[in-house]
Structures are given as C-alpha cells and as structure tokens.
Image 1 (cartoon, rainbow, N blue to C red):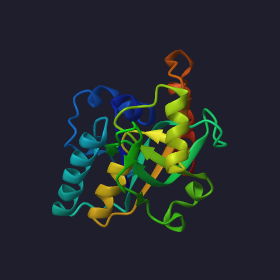
Image 2 (image 1 turned 135 degrees about the vertical axis):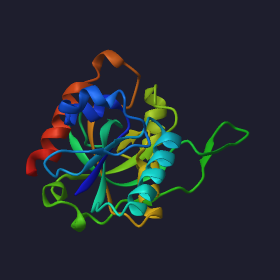
Image 3 (image 1 turned 60 degrees about the horizontal axis):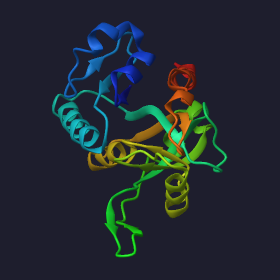
Length: 216
C-alpha cells in the first residue's frame, strides 16, 4: 500500500471526493486511512517548508506505529517550461528534482545556485503503469515563475522540464527515511508569463487521477 501525498485539499479531493468533508478538517500531521485497502493519504501543505516538515513527521510516525507502507506517491500539478516537449495536461513522472531559487546573487545580478539535486527511487521499482510515463526533470521553487524570461532562464540553468513547489522536499524526506518515493504530476499551465485565466487546474487533476488510479 502507498501513501498518497498531496500539498492541498483540492488536489486530495480530486482523487478521493468521498473524503471531501473531512479534508478541510484534516491537519497536516494526520494520516487519512483510505477504504478498501487502498492505502493512506495526507495533505501536507504548500511549499518546501510545510511539505518537508510534515512528511518527515508522518514517516517517523508510520515507522513508530509499524504501519506497512510500500512507498510514497507525491501527486499534484505543475507548470511546464517552454520548448521542453511537455504540454498542458501531459502527465509526467518526475525522476529528479533540485531547488531552483536557493543560492546567491552576484554583483552583476546573476544568480548562482547551491547544489541541491535529489533523485526519486529508480523507475524499475515503480508500479508498472507508472513506469510507462514520460520522465521529467523537476525544479522546486519558493516563488513560481511569472515571466517568460525567468522561465527560460530556469529551464536552461537547471536543464529542467517542469516547475513545482514541493517535489525536492518530498523526495529528500523519503530518502532520509529510506522510503521508496515516486513523483507524478500533471501539467496545468506553462511556466512562463503568468496568466491564471489560461490554467487548466481541474482538467490536469482529472488527467492525473486517470493515470495514477488506472491500475487500481
């Protein structure tokens, strides 16, 4: 059984609408036991700090209570950088992540990142239906891209395909607990000039659920 890890209640309830009432009451340090032996779920909060802290706590709690979990599935939406061959509503398996805005600025205004790369569990250990997904390189950021210039700069500097706010944190927490981890995301928008009206958040979540739960 897997632990399905989400950042927000909206992402969680898109997968498990029968738990919509309890989602708003669920705190980030609680496991949600799913019916019919489907495993567990959690809503960890947006961003690196919330996601890492709360997942670390839950994984320690799982071990202490001797709850049997075979791995963590980090699930959510993302933005895709331009010209990387990934389109809105594509579903990708994010096999590696790094933090995109941790570093320092030089006198001339250029940005120098600190090394922060982490890798998810090797793809051959993923559920078979997820092994078939397109592999992507993720960039975890504290501040989402809002201009085409920044999007292209980030994609080039990190050779990244997609942008999100939690992936590196979740993978790092799982590595620290020696827990298998896979990250699956659906593209809701392009990470370029910010235009929320064009985003396809709900459609992306529907595509993600169809992909992940197809082998349930």
